[in-house]
Image (cartoon, rainbow, N blue to C red; front, side):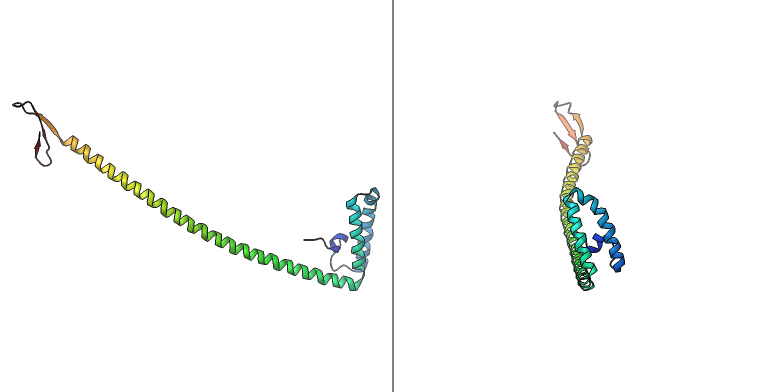
Length: 160
């Protein structure tokens, strides 16, 4: 926000003419020392101070200036409100998009993990079955032929 002439003089908007005169005199004394040294900022501030005093000392110009300040502030508030409303809408849309993306990525990850878990479960079941079959086999040697005979107790069948 730009500095107003009230800010330059250091007075409130409802200041009367004597307060404006006093503030101008005090600010002028402070700037006089700096301006003598010739700093560009002090010279610019001195110019602003003079312009502000000239404007605020004239009741008609001051009324116009006050109306302009109020209109500018109202427009600025409207712009801020619109920006905040847009930011809220934008953040809601962003949050919804982020949530949808999280759901999609989560669903894909769940499918991959589920498929991998099923694959591991099947491999484990096969390994357990194979291990049980190996442990359940009893190996006997046929004395007449010298050939090994495998007896599987689960179904009672013999294999050579």
